[in-house]
View 1 (spheres, rainbow, N blue to C red):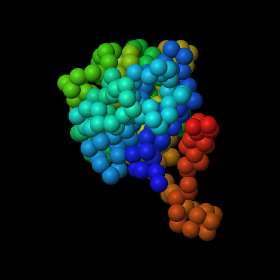
View 2 (view 1 turned 60 degrees about the horizontal axis):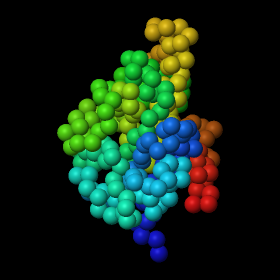
View 3 (view 1 turned 90 degrees about the vertical axis):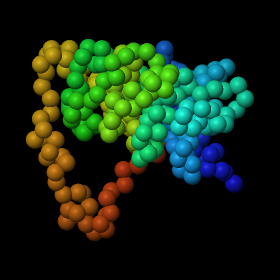
View 4 (view 1 turned 120 degrees about the vertical axis):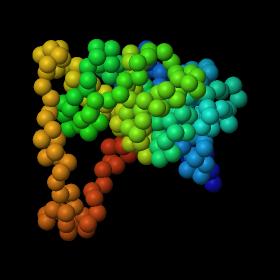
Length: 256
């Protein structure tokens, strides 16, 4: 029988592989980043990618490469020789201050990093992740890795009640109620950053964006399952939208 810890470790290993598979942790950034998930039966603990591997790459992570930590950032359990990731305080301080958050992701996406250095306020440019950037995102004004409790708490406090924060010249942090939510948010954030960068290159700093009234047209309307032509087939249930996440999980889990 698979224990809950083993199941969470597998989920987190798969999430790390997905970050590599979608191009957010490749090349020089192959080992840079980590996804984590709170342990459902013990909310004061979470599973995260460790460090000190003989071969370190998000694309090759396995369940046994994950470690269990507490919300103070201390190692609780892991394979011999493994340590917490160096920026464990990103995860521990967010979990400690935001009990509703179940998953945290940090990586160094190329265009997100560029936007933070260029001082671009990410604006809505496409449907994917449009709500992520509808309002200006906070920017942690440091390039350094976040190692101390003071640095982790500074980041968590700047995140506040939000779900996403940029790190100047360093990457981003996304959060969610699940790994699929936090990882998908990071993928969508980088898509928005890429579109913003292209617009900046094409038109300069005063490039247009998708206006609020068009975003409202997407968000302020009857849900799909309430429309007459969907009521019978969906029977009052919102449509299932996990298919793309399940595809990514299946793709990176082959041979795991």
